[in-house]
View 1 (tube, rainbow over the protein chains, first blue to last red):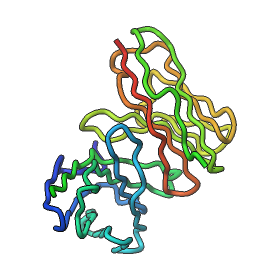
View 2 (tube, each protein chain N blue to C red):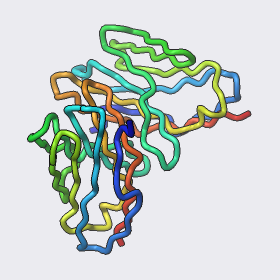
View 3 (tube, rainbow over the protein chains, first blue to last red):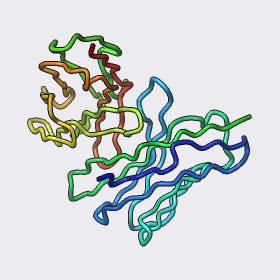
View 4 (cartoon, rainbow over the protein chains, first blue to last red):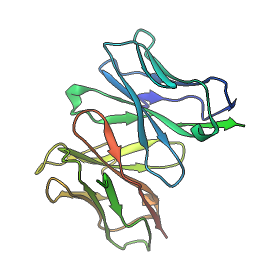
Amino acid sequence: DQQVKQNSPSLSVQEGRISILNCDYTNSMFDYFLWYKKYPAEGPTFLISISSIKDKNEDGRFTVFLNKSAKHLSLHIVPSQPGDSAVYFCAASSRSNTGKLIFGQGTTLQVKP
Amino acid sequence: NAGVTQTPKFQVLKTGQSMTLQCAQDMNHNSMYWYRQDPGMGLRLIYYSASEGTTDKGEVPNGYNVSRLNKREFSLRLESAAPSQTSVYFCASSLWETQYFGPGTRLLVL
């Protein structure tokens, strides 16, 4: 049972445009959500997070939106840059479950110059 | 401040061999984790340690054991490697919800 799903394996956008990466979850106990970026042959690096008490969190070019009723979150990157090309993982946790993260399958973003 | 370090970077094993993957963090984090990443499956939790002296199973613990040696170090042991354990292994640590990952160990079991 996949509790966190990223249904788009890949996404290609033009430099300067907006990239929108999507993530769905099924467990209503999740109360904290994170996005990680991963380059080949490196470990995932933390990008941005959001608590379930918020519906939006912004950090520079990156914004995460949370729609609790739809159990859906999205990551917006504006403007997209070639250096953003990487695999993006969304993850969810429940404070009642010792903060263990459940990861989605990942979406490969390619930003074309 | 190196963050999370892992050794070795790459290892080839024959079926049935054993090995230990090492992980250390210098961020004074309480919790540490071991994940494996396989194509199309994201990262799956193998074992975790919420604090020094405690360890618990994650989603895919079969075939692995762990040791939380002290607050800094958390090792993962494969007692009898199988081809199904071919994967990339990541160690992570956290103080609260955000986990910080090491660079990974690529393991090939023949």
